[in-house]
Length: 260
Image (cartoon, rainbow, N blue to C red; front, top):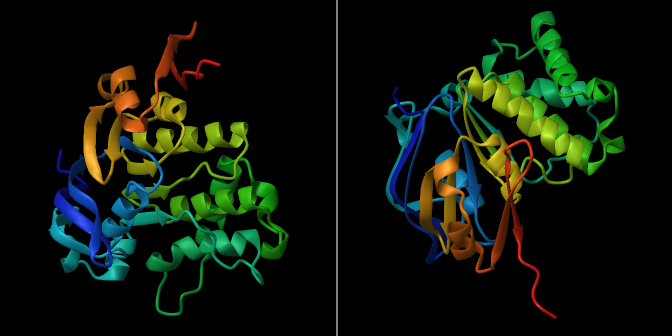
């Protein structure tokens, strides 16, 4: 199956000092890649470089079989959706209007959403368990509620590839699990996705593959059951780790408490 995303020897960053150093990865349909690593190691920069927002110095980015530079923005937006880490101004818009912005690449000359577009947006809000936010004014939304609407906007875009930068930030545990569960359901149906995460256990529970980044370099990458193990995580975070097996069979990871 042809990859949706390929990076080869990617060197990218800001200013004179690159953040990423020779990053290789491939994402195919039906794969959810979790990107893990310490703060400042280049996880968000990787996604932004794929989008063309963070300049790369050397290497290659290919999307859907074509070089990133060959894509016209609107055409790419019909196939790739981006759920950013930071919030955008929401004042003056309802929750439904914010989500409908994701239909923009698919709209006609006048840019007006149809009844079908509105029905799709409401269905996604219902799927995510936040249908009550449809009529909520943007200025009355909490950080977590805005996060859920950003995800809904990305899903309404109906992409083939979904990039998510810390999609579980600002969310309670139930919504963290619900968010990744809905993304994984779409991945199982053929979507490709890359998510920057900080919670190793969420990555273990929902990702199919993981990419471990430290100091802008790939420490390890591959299927989650192969890569997520104590030694790799200790090298990634510079901390001793404990592992356990839950009665359900799920693997659990936690930093070892320092001796006192």
